[in-house]
Length: 259
Image 1 (cartoon, rainbow, N blue to C red):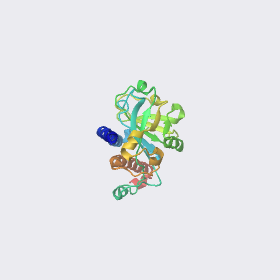
Image 2 (cartoon, rainbow, N blue to C red):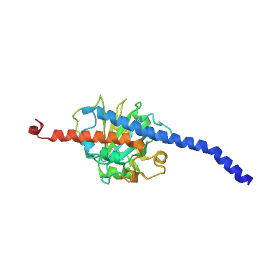
Image 3 (cartoon, helix red, strand yellow):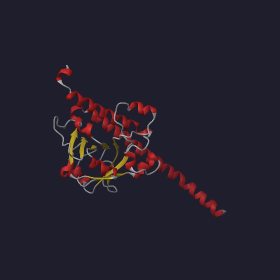
Image 4 (cartoon, rainbow, N blue to C red):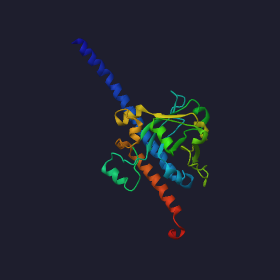
């Protein structure tokens, strides 16, 4: 009896610390979703210096990594943490309000949490607080992302650009690339700096938001309900891609119809 009592008391002593750690992980994951929404809002505000509409309308998935360099440089081999969403024909398990909001727009999955790591990233980027937006453009890139391990390779599969004041207007993106990478520039950025990097599932953040370590593939296929904390991010994704589709349609409209 005494041994049982000591075990119970010991577990009760550990419980507050475990709850505090769980709350901290939940807060960190929710904060990541909020910051990712902020990044996409900034991209939308960049106008013709933002991500080209032909890229946004064709993208199968959008991955956002806020504050790359500051998010764990040289700590445990993880240099950035972000979230990914993918288009899904199946739709999501969403509330009535969310379904109304998505009416007339492509359905997007709930966010899957990811880490971005690689042995040489920190030494090459040389930027302070760079936000990254990465767009998966074809089935091969999607396959890698769904496998929870997308590896970066500069040779023909990745192109990079910049959103903001230093962005070039009118440049033609390589739509055949598996991955389009854009920095919301707060410093220098080179696409080659990501060569050899790997995107993998962030299990801790996944468990914090979804309650268990659900595979990224299941989340990105639209088989998981969108959590309330992800609503702002999904709204920004909807707004950004809808804006791009409208701009592209306007450009393709015959001159007589525009008058």
